[in-house]
Amino acid sequence: MNNLFSIFDPSSSFMNLSFNWTSSMFIIMFIPLSLWMIPNRSLILLTKILNILNNEIQTLLKNNSFKGISIMMISLFMMILLNNFMGLLPYIFTSSSHLVFNLSFSLPIWLTLMFFGWLNKTESMFSHLIPLGTPPLLMPFMVLIESISNIIRPLTLAVRLTANMIAGHLLISLLSNNGNSISIYFYWLIILTEIILMTLESSVAIIQSYVFTILSTLYTSEI
Image 1 (cartoon, rainbow, N blue to C red):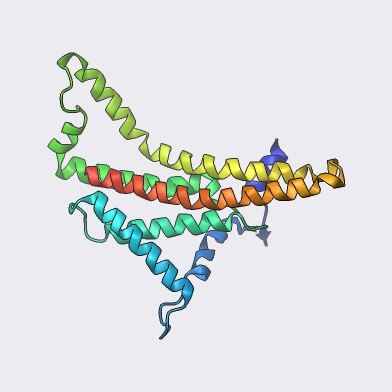
Image 2 (image 1 turned 90 degrees about the vertical axis):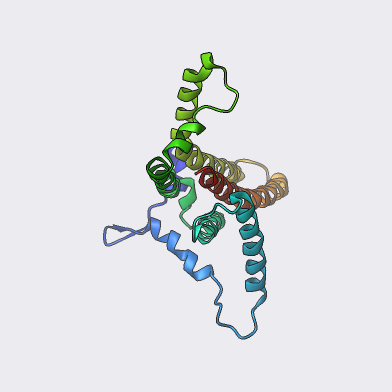
């Protein structure tokens, strides 16, 4: 089991310095330059994706957005998306499959929203603890349930992304490790299954980064 999960923590060091997390900085290499006189196809595609995401974020915020919130959410989406995709490449450290990496995004966002909400909109934050139409007998229980659900929000955001990235990588690793123990006539079946899993993981990489961004935007819209 230790060997199985070691694919998520490969050892890459130089002069006793760990270089695993430097793979998260490779995102700079994938950002297309915006200084071309004629935009290339990758920049045009990226612009369309970002415009669609920006419209989605503005729709969820309903004109209650803070300045720069759309840029922050789009940057968060691109950071998680490219790290998810790079994790599918061989010999690259999968940062988004680690809970520490994902908590570094969800926890600051949640703490910022909580501090801002409780300091500036205290009455509104208290009103969220009791939904409209709750019977008086259930009010103490609803306050407890809403408080717990609010506290675990950053953890659920991080665990959702971590679990989805780990699950697909484990399936791909299990199939590839069993290649030496089967007949050569079944290689085509393993290769076909690996291609299907890689396609599925590519869609999961997009969906999970989108879900992470949209949920963060919904939490922001409540404040």
